[in-house]
Length: 141
Image (cartoon, rainbow, N blue to C red; front, side, top):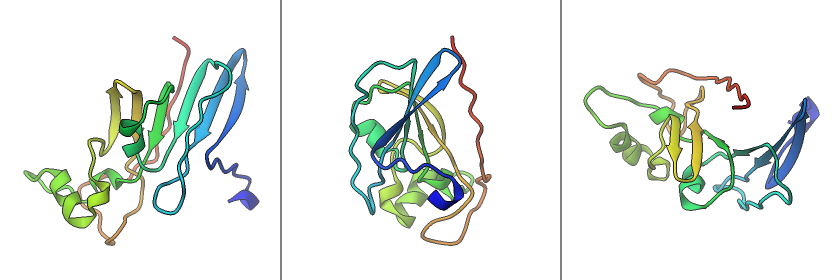
């Protein structure tokens, strides 16, 4: 990814200035193969964004962020009418089950967006869950 020009944020923070706004972006390492560790910024920024693979950290920890962005659940991956998607996730992969499957959530920890993504995991199947590539616009209040 680095050779393609991506900046990898593994328990690391980068700052971006757009006009007179200063934005902090923190990338949390993933749990399965990494060691996630969040550190608060040393100074206050206009907007704090947290990027994480597994959204369970958002509910398990107190973060001082304006927006957290996550994936991991593939939007439930299999969505059968009249069956709760969390029940299907429990059978496919219990580690995927949490309160945040897809979409925007407002919680006591702040705002979280869970993207459904475009792929699959554990089994090569996706039913009734639209692939998703999101564009999120952030503006000053």
